[in-house]
Length: 120
Length: 120
DNA sequence: ATAATACATGAATAGATGTTCATGTATTAA
DNA sequence: TTAATACATGAACATCTATTCATGTATTAT
Image (tube, rainbow over all chains, first blue to last red; front, side, top):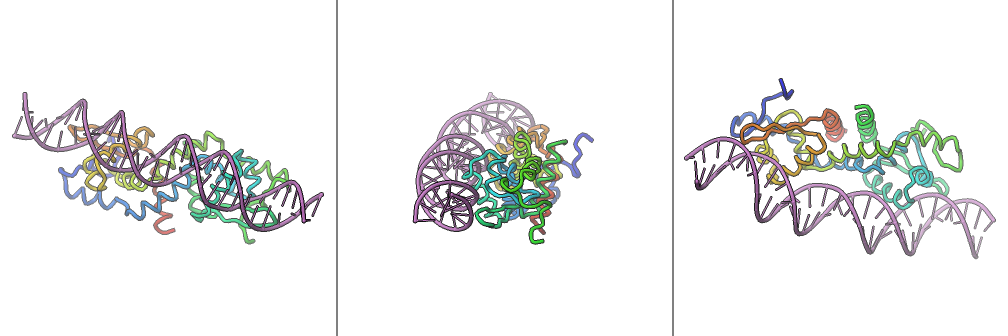
């Protein structure tokens, strides 16, 4: 078979039953929204570089700045974004603030995506 | 331990060796760019709904329109986007055009993301 | 040939997103 | 207490993105 689909091509005027099958695959709008939020968090190159640093370490903002070559402000804004999505946690210690990734789903998706991109 | 990181907190003025370890985790800029492209493709709710239909079936545009409740134009634009990223293939048959997902990485990421979102 | 169907596409537009700039707060050092 | 360091945040701005609107092309039906 040229096209390795599990079912035949679906076109509504041909088979009404197929249409019903298709509709079962359609994800809910609310599911789509939540799913897109997760992927959106991983959709920016600088945010991905930031996440790659937080993946296995607690790191303070200043060190992120030095390592990423982004401005402190840009990093803080990105961290705020990730905080609002509950994807990172932070801990204040003296005048430092340590951030770490706090979502296993994102960690898993990041790693899987990386595997695919690196040798896919 | 309160924070289950694999290494100690990293802050540059405390330990230069730790900084070197951290830098090894930082992904390349080009890797970040390519990775973000993949996740960006999955970052829009309507596109996710569209992809959910193409995940296991070849479907023609008109049926996508009827099922998704989006305009034909919006769907065609999204399909063009996915085409340019080589994420879908298409096949013309008479006056119909059948689309199908053509990237296992995206398929895997979609499914994994869905699992996490649905019962995570 | 003419009309209708299926799909594509450029332009315009509204909204989202990421960065910078300026400034503010909290903690430590001098 | 004064200065410096570490970080946060609002506003402004430029860019990107998704949709709509109008229109175009190709195929089939009449």
